[in-house]
Image (cartoon, rainbow, N blue to C red):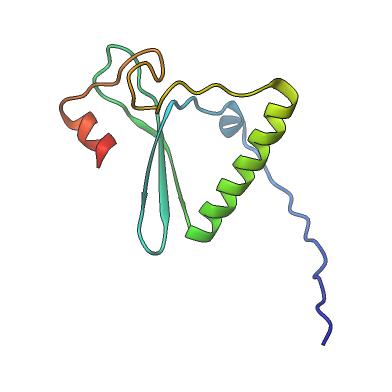
Length: 113
């Protein structure tokens, strides 16, 4: 039996005006279950003790892994063109983003667990 590769499907993707503006996020909270990964994109700002989720993406574990691979590949391409991306410590470590998110109250609970 010969393995046949199916023809590649072309998908037309529509980008609405609102979505084309994008959102800024400097914090992603990732949770998962056996059936899905949930990624909440938010932003933490200096002096603001509360962070609002601006976008939530829910996907399958398989698609989450494909996204990881696509991000890895694109970061490698970026670094070949523009140089290494420097990361100082973990995002939640002191100095990670030039300011510290709140460490008490509901925001800290949401970030850690």
